[in-house]
Image 1 (tube, one colour):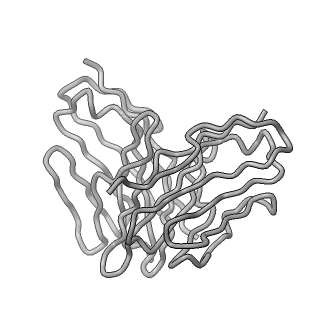
Image 2: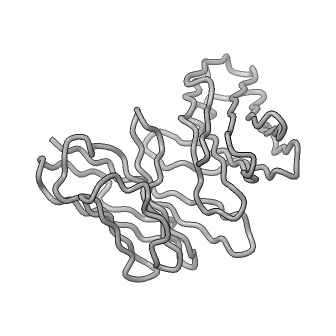
Length: 112
Length: 115
């Protein structure tokens, strides 16, 4: 089955700097790659997603890139703000399947 | 819509006791998922339902775990008997897959502590 690896497990950046989180997946049949943000005491919430027929997607300060050949995808957050501090999860889903497989998560801390 | 509603938010129980976690999905959603979150194993899918029918329960750790969805607006996850290693946050999520990629909407979770 699918396996998703996520790095780094913790990331600390200065407010205003950029943050990058990287994930790799194992199954080339995966075609949907969402990113979720989990704030303390809450459930994960979708922030951006990308399909395998697209190489990059942007939404204001966040962007996701996908390299199908290398089977990796990344989350980029620019001009980081204190409210970006949270745990971020990448995930992958195979075509035709319902099951989302999550990475282990990255705890992002934005230092003022 | 109020979102996915889970209860209880916190449960502390003793080893051997029965635990029942409850979930009300978003109205109109046709998929319901139960996930478990721990520091060691991250977010693990336990089971999911489509139109109230269990589709894949391969993630359910043992026979001590069972899940039901008697109707479109209610699901339960039961652990009997509970053990300390079951301590985790249990999330319920729902989605609407037809015609879309099926964004998962998570509840706020039920934090279970088994002493």
